[in-house]
Image (cartoon, rainbow, N blue to C red; front, side, top):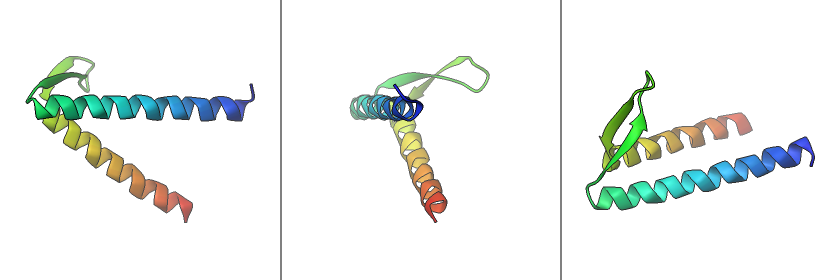
Length: 72
């Protein structure tokens, strides 16, 4: 396996995992459930799935803008 192939496989795996987490957060948000996340200091935090889903969408939008800048 080449280094490039390994990077591509890792990227695809990370994208698949992110998509699975996003789908799960959408389901939890619809039912008004909460999710456990790791806080800044490493301690666990319980937050609403709706809040977390919105935060994930905002971060994804920010990444899209950064990618477009890099392409220029």
